[in-house]
Image 1 (cartoon, rainbow, N blue to C red):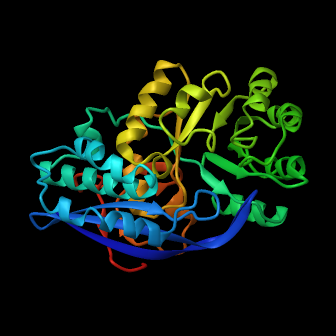
Image 2 (image 1 turned 30 degrees about the horizontal axis):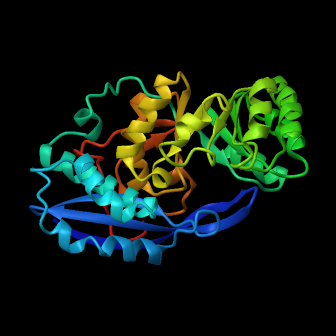
Image 3 (image 1 turned 90 degrees about the horizontal axis):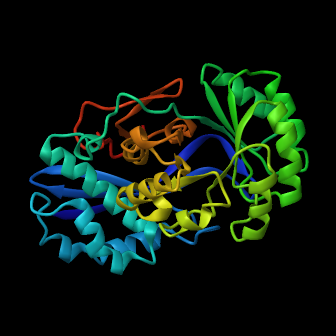
Length: 344
């Protein structure tokens, strides 16, 4: 196989604010693996500020596999087997491993003539709708964003300001849709417990990652006293974190970029189910390349946050499509990705 790497700056439709940063552009890496004239694509966004992974670091680590990949035939070895082979070299860079793993699954499905979820033996007839994320902004701007997508059934609201409950009260006035909260580590245990009472009155579904990732003592208190379920995100990065979240969270939000791809995400989902936890898979504002990979997991999920393409001003590929929260698969095998090669 041949490996090609692409870099894109994805422009966002609106500035996107969370508790620790605001951005207008998302840098991303696309890995392209080629065999028999067929290309498979995978994606990992850059996230230097919180996780420390840059485009340059991903390029360097993936380029180190070029010679070995040339000796591999994807009709003779499966993507999950290759994940295990390359993990020792990419263990310190799960973002890079995600881009490669996702590309290998896309290519494998295309070579086999089957969609990735079919290769996994899943039933895609039932899958959750994706939420649409409303980033932190002025309240009137947040209401405008929500009303622009008023036909969507579920919204995830980013919080982490000094007036979070005011935001929620105002947003609830303009929609009857399901609302979820993501505080991105911005609250204390005491705030979360108290806020949960107001949020329950506002018919909020759950609270995602209210406390800093390392505050396990605080999360134990929240888990025991919050009147709403709590879902881990920053506290659930690697496979071993699922067990640690058990008894501290009601569910986990698995990010394929952070855990190293679709292969470990499948294992994390299975482990969470064994522990009788709710399972969500989220995105990190990927293009249609990454979302098409994430979408293959949807038949296994309770919740999904796969709205990346809807947040972009321009996209770089075709694949799954999203209409009012409903994700539809492409007719193309694998993850269904076709890269345009430029912003479109």
